[in-house]
Length: 187
Image (tube, rainbow, N blue to C red; front, side, top):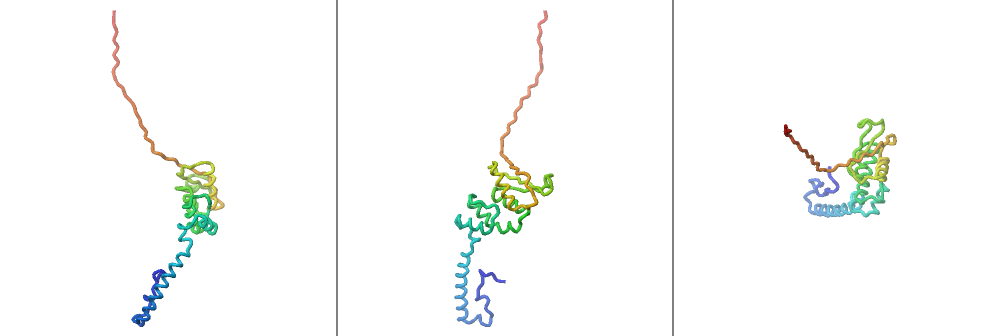
């Protein structure tokens, strides 16, 4: 099977006419025009060129693809990732993987734990993240992002933020041993 990008009419010629110079010249001319046409068609693709699109075009594409939890105030790189993955997330909507991917795309490294993994109630889950920019609005945005792709029958229990830092801990102690000598003067 041939790929359209690599297709050559000359290569497809049957051996009975592959020696004719006029046919070979015609095939080369057709191949050249097909490559030009293929290049022009490539520029028409919007989704593959999303990394070069302006902010307003990315916003329009997000609307077109119904990108989960799309917010126009997000950084351009995050918005592009949301649009690129929107179709796949719609296919996986309602799964743990979809929730985890959307939340990780927006907020950074995050994981989703199902109820049976942490001893919660059935149909509940929680999200764990290492993103340190935590405040009330952050947690609300987390909940909104999860709401867009989770099953409607499941509930978000909590958002856990893990903070880690390297600390130098110094421990010191002293041990003193010795004998007690009492000197008395006797009269």
